[in-house]
Length: 264
Image (cartoon, rainbow, N blue to C red; front, side, top):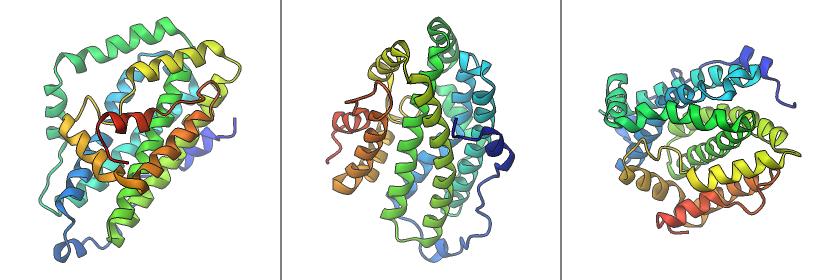
C-alpha cells in the first residue's frame, strides 16, 4: 500500500503548540461562537479513546497495520485535545479529563453497551468489517479536517489559524491511512462494498453525534458549514468518498447537513 505505516509510527510526534504567543488572546479573545465550537472539538478529540476501545473488540484488532495506526492515531488525537484545551483555558473555559469522563458516564447504558454491540456485529461481518471501519474513519477524518479548515478561515486570529493548521496536517495523515486502506479493502469486493454502504446509510452521523448534545452538534455544523463556502467543503468530502469502490453517488455529509437544516 502507498501509506508507510512504519514510517508514520516512527515519526509521529505530539502536535506542537507551546511555542505560539497565546498572550494575544488576553487583548483579543475569541468570539463566543468560536469558543463553543472549539470546546466541542476539544471534547471529541479527548473522546477518541472510546472509539479506539470499540474497535479493539472488532476484527480490526487482528490486523497489524491497523493496530499500529490506531494506537498512534489515538495518541496524536489526545494531544490535539490538549492543545485546544489550552486555548480554552486562556478564555476561562476548563475542559478536564474528569469533566469529559463525567459526560461519558451520563451516556449511560448506550456507552456501556457500545463495545458489546460492536463486537457482535463486527465479528459476524468478519474481515469485511475492517473495510467498513476504514471507510468510516476516512469520512470522519475528512469532515474533521474540513471543520478545522473552516474555523481557521472564519477567524482572523493568526495564532489560532497556525494551531488549527498544525492539527489539520496530522489529520491529513490519518485521512491518507484510512482512505488507502478503504480503497484496497473495497476493491473487487462486492460484499464489503454492500456492507459498507448499508452501514453508512443506516448508522453514520456527523462526528460527535451521540456523544455531544444535539444542540451542540447543530451549532458546530451551522457555525462551520453554513453558506456556499461551508457547503463547498462538505461537497468535497462527499466527492472523495464517492470515488472509492462501490461508493458512487453517496452524499452522506451533505444529506446530514440538509437533515439538520444547515443552510447551503
